Amino acid sequence: MKRIGAIELGGTKAIVGAAVMDGTARPTTIDTVRIPTTSPEETLARCADTLRDLAGRMGGLDAVGIASFGPLQLDPRRPGYGAVTRTPKPGWAGAPVRDTLAAAVHDLRPGGVPVAIDTDVNGAALGEGRWGAAQGLDSHVYVTVGTGIGVGVVVGGRPQHGLVHPEGGHLLVRRDPARDPYAGHCPYHGDCLEGLACGPAIEARVGRPATELADDHPVWDLVGDYLGQMAANLLFTLSPQRIVIGGGVGARHGLLDHVRHHARRHIGGYIDHPAVTGDLTTFIVPPGLDGESGLAGALALGWDAAAGRSA
Image 1 (cartoon, rainbow, N blue to C red):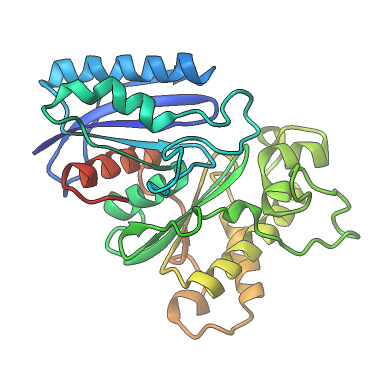
Image 2: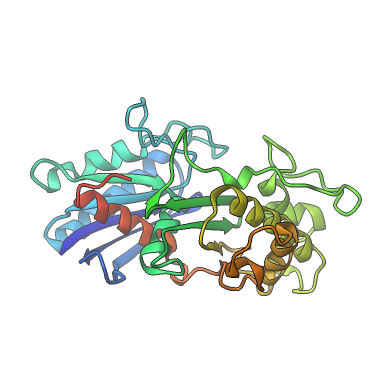
């Protein structure tokens, strides 16, 4: 059994918790605390204080896992490992997330407390793979669709990195200007996936928040088309065994039906596998962790760090 601290650091709030884990059963967190994401100094200090409080009640910590918004520097060989890199969130570019929290918990264990960090979507993908909708699979993708769009990838049971880390929210998709004259929300790419299908893009296009739109509003089929293109592109490039779609917009009633319909259309019958030749209901699925995918992923990162396995 290991005592694992976990932080899901999002753009609007951080969730801090801890669990005593055996690495197999879905962990039950102890006193999950929500902290508003303000400045890096204030937010990380409150996260650190909460971790230390939980550690005191548990008799220490064996490791900490952090699933954070990004982009992040995830190459331990490069300067700024564990820090936020280029982000539109004011004040957070260069914020040393991992170093700050590692320093705060270092003295809670002889030799220091191992601290692992990954993106929030890679963390969510890992959590869904360990205990959720992708359990038992070798490779899968987790997509969150909300204020932005993030894509986490797990291959061989481990989060995918590489040159940096997956940024599938900025995939380039095909926009028909006659059907959708909206030029896109993304400040970097305009009409990339995030620029066309995230919550702010929907609101900018129709003039009302997505939460106020009826289920039969035509924008949902349009968003489903863009996400269906994403699903087809991910299938063609990564060949995941499953795509899990969550987030505030992703959880919209009926949206996954649109996504599956358009994904099947864009796949075009090219992939010969039962998972993608039918209605795609076992290939494109909702999360299985009841909104706790990110925190579960942070716990999984912490467990692996305690066991000496890096992300």
